[in-house]
Length: 500
View 1 (tube, rainbow, N blue to C red):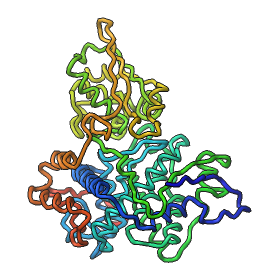
View 2: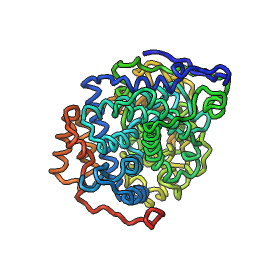
View 3: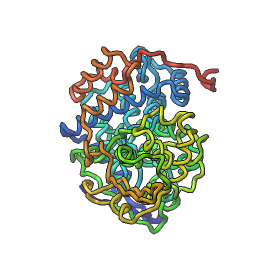
């Protein structure tokens, strides 16, 4: 690994492109690194994970809208859509749009938390779409996805976006470009121009995850993937982009991040060094914001010993991130509103804790129904919960050693007789450092559970057979990595411009 000092340079300095972060990203992408077997297996796990949550969301409204837009852009020899036969193809950028939206809709796939938040699996849909359209094999696909994860994790470790109220798409989009560049075996110059454009266009505010959170949260990865494909398409035609996009006098660092005096230390692998960062990422066992995962597990344990009806107050001592993003530190009244959107409630630790304590479980549909959120006992318990930042949990959240990081909290429960019960959990059970870290079989079980009644047995068997052979797949098999659904897929959606 090498550490790159990233800071703003005046225009008169004419910073050589070889010293720019975008060039370093592109250089690694173009180096065609080999990947280790355990990395290839984890890539396969995440493809299964994405397919599971996407298929479970096929008939939800945002997914139907995104799919309708994609179906209006058919392309023979293009990419496939979740749920549909490979005989139906659309343009790769629109497949990325529709498929990434389906993956993100339930907020139920992988995550990485460091200086910033990340869902690195959001890069898989656009990379797979381009692989299908251009006939890449499974080994090339696996390497491309591993490269995208490598860049995404590196940026999330080094550059905080949320503290400047910027959304994390700004790291996802250039990471996806890096993966696409590796997929296509492009030269550094071409990838460099596409990274510059991707960064330039992908900065947006965190209002998309604040207050009344809308379906745009689900569309964001599709938007990013579509932008990444279009940026690379443009660069492949010889077109340039704003540069230096990170270090320039009027760059994203100077005006959107920490300002002209900022220094960021970004650690990237040397060209050709094998990507390993995917192994530091983790998926969700529960369909809710990642920082609630450990606390859902803790609530299930507490439920075995405590009657929730006896609880008068709960204080959750946790990290800065958890308190201010999904806790009472966010100062969002919507996080206590039973009429709030599902997207808001899956970012309300208070709601999540109340339901998990009462039910002793968490379910991607049942835990969010109108009846469930309006239950009187839930409303009482929900409003008795608050969070507070604890410096020790914030330090653990940012621990340099991945084996020491913690994303949970300490729960202080007061009962109706004055008894105070304290419990804590550092990481989710499914986390690599958790009580039962997930392997391939767990991802398969998640797929089986979420797609029961959606994907027939023979299709499931064929999908798992291909996934287990990912590194050896021919391009004809890569076409079939988006499983076909047996249950009816709703294609009704209000008409738009493309339907006219």
